[in-house]
Image: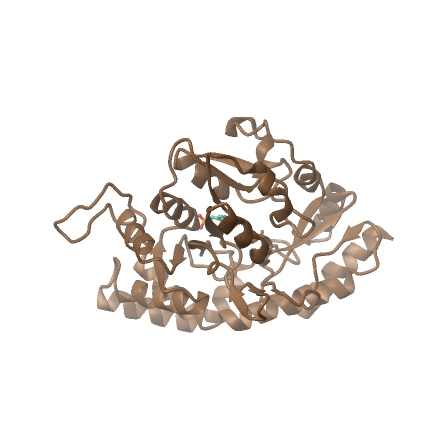
Length: 374
Ligand SMILES: *Cc1c(COP(=O)(O)O)cnc(C)c1O
């Protein structure tokens, strides 16, 4: 990372700007001796539940466990089928596999989220759930999806790991937050997510009391009280110190989302009209969506050459999935044929996007890309 003029992420700059607040909160927590599941976790759970609009939020060690526990608590088991996409981070699929169930992968639409029109043809008598993935900070079409789920009596667990704060407007004209549509929503606080800890963290949001209760048990070895075990569980608690840090950062979340949207708008304007590039939707282009731009992803021609060209000019980019998920032989998913997903594996590239990016840095990235395509 050192040496890049515009690094893909910049955790030390992020820290520098928050240093005083963060160090004060760490000092406070350590002085109180509050290390495991203390009031900072509870406060953070309340913050997220109220932000997302669910009754409960359960702090966990990762977004992966938030997904896995939600499925587990919803009763997904062996011989069940769960529909999701292949154009996602592997955790969306591994959570299904870890429940003993079978992932059924379908293609995404033009905006990289689940193509709701392809769901019904994959529903069988074994189908129990759908996991829509709100990829890159864009909420799936949850109206279509919830209608299908209701019609076929399917559970919906939202993978909102990349989408804290993303919204979708319902037919009635009401904004609803990603993660609050289904039975549960899974969020990640991996350091480079919209809201990131200084380590791992996750949360499962739900308004279902039963699911909340079960996940609370699953994260702490089934310990209902210090002496009563209600089930077998795991060790997957959100670290109290990370929760304290997240409470500090949470105060900045809205301003960070605003800045990400601004940057996406500047990129879109600066990169418009170049043949060979397909831009993500602009922040205000879709009246029913509020994207948080976890990632800024282009579909481009000559993708690998572009990445090399930018690297030579000090711009770090990310090509996250050069091999489509279902094409990794070790995962046992190679029976799926997903033409659009396979094409995206060859064409997508992510540009740096984080609140700390300067105007000059954004302009430099745009200028380099324009030069490459002239
Ligand atoms: C990051 C991410 C996860 C997993 O979150 P972790 O906190 O890293 O376990 C799951 N799904 C998607 C789409 C993600 O981007």
